[in-house]
Length: 292
Image 1 (cartoon, one colour):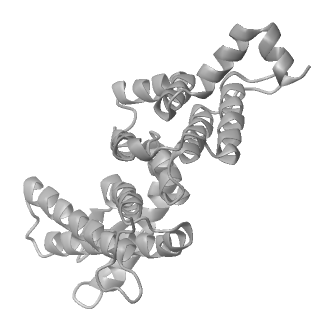
Image 2 (cartoon, rainbow, N blue to C red; image 1 turned 180 degrees about the vertical axis):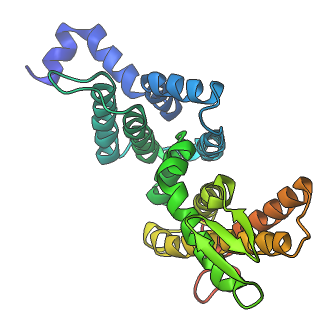
C-alpha cells in the first residue's frame, strides 16, 4: 500500500501520525522521563529511607537546567542513532528490572544505570550537536544513588591508599606506621574513617568536571583526556586533608568538629576550583573559552 493510498483510506490515522511527528522535543523528553518512572520511584525510596545521600538530585537538576537553557535550540528532527539507543536501553532497563524467561532481574542499581543511560541517549538525540555526549552521560550516572555502593566497594581501598600516602608525608616529623586503614602516630591510633575515603569529594569533583565541560562545550575527546587529572586532584585533596588533620591530632591540637568540617569544605572548594580550571583551560587560551 502506497502512502497516498494510506492517506486516502485512513485519513484520521494519517493525520494522527503527522500530529505525533510534530510533537515538540520537550514532549518527547517528557514521555521518555515517564517511561522511566519505576527508576524515579526507586531513587526516591533510596533517598527517603536514607540508604544513600541525595546528591544525585544535583545532577538531575543540572540536566534539567541544561534542557531548559537550550529549550529553543532543541532539534525538531532528533538524531535517529541516539533515539534508537534510547529505545533499546529503555527496553533493556525494563527487562532488567522485571527479569525475562529464566533470567532473574538485575540488581536495582544496574537496572537504574540502564535507565539513566536511556535518558542520556534521549537527551543527546534532541540536544544541539555541539553539546558533548561525555558530560551528559557523566551527569546521568552521577544522578544515581550510588554513593553508599561506592563507599562499600571502594571506600576501604581508598582509605588504605590515603593512609599510606599520609604515612609518607608525616614520617619526617612523626613516628608513624600504618595498620590497615589506620595510622599509629607517636603512639596514638588514628582511624581513617569513611568520610576520609574521598568518595564524596570524588562525586563533587566529577560533577564539577561535567558541569564545566558542558558550560565551555568541551568536546568528548578533550573531556575524557582531562578525567585522569580530575581523579588525581581528588586523591591529592583527600590525602592533604587527612594528613593535616592527623598531624594536628598527633600534635595534641585536635580541631573541634566545626573546624574539622570547615577545613574539609574549604579543601573541597579548592579541589573543585582546580578541577574547573583544568576542565575549562584550553591550549593557546589562558582563560579557556565558551564556544557559541
